[in-house]
Image 1 (cartoon, rainbow, N blue to C red):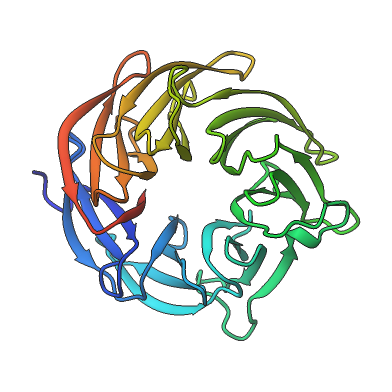
Image 2 (cartoon, rainbow, N blue to C red; image 1 turned 30 degrees about the horizontal axis):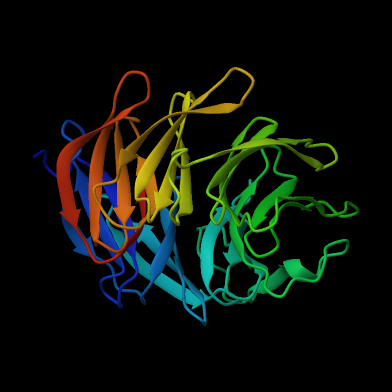
Length: 344
């Protein structure tokens, strides 16, 4: 195993109690193995993590009824030190993103259907003098039907930084929320019961994974008007599969040639090839070697693929091979209910 100074640092958020919900790990870039380095002092259920390498800050969303965000400074070795933990401004925060200037931290609150906006100081800390505000209550946006439960699951800035793209599982919609005054919110409806969850942007093409229908959709996005158009969809499950499954995470390979979608209950990774037109085609499925995969990520080199198996409380490690397929390395890393792994 390489020393911690030459190893690559990773951070793991878990559905666990205080002192066990945020862990620091060291990766051996040759074998892909991970070893535990430290635990961070913050409250429980660190279900989503975001690293700002410029400011050397790690942000964690704590998915609780009274949601909060913890901010950690990364020291010279990359280990986090808790700086502050403040209210997120809503219930059940599940996703984070920074604006282009790193002046605002946006938060998707699954629990109460709001998008929160937290101001940041120059040093990357949350500005305690300016409280978090609810930027949008999605179920009440003009032009949208009143839904019994809005559940935004992911948000991300458009490439030009002028739109905040947000998937709403409860509304069955993908939305483009303008960050410039005078523009209207745009949205596109997915088939009823889709439950849109995670997505990736490929220029003006958006690939969207829906949890409840376990489908992969592709949409066109116009950055000038914010308009969205659904172009097609395919299943992330095998054609012969008739049981229940709930898709969770979607990842793009570092070379941009393949997509990897997680299926919970079916407990598989669906591998898709991306055509030159941005349309995905299913290649194969790989068993996760665990139960209820919540999220996954590639290491910075794009060689190893890590799956957070929430219910079996383990990470499993795969190596990406030529052609995009995944090979299980035989490595299991025991951990309390893993939710999200990010690299520093």
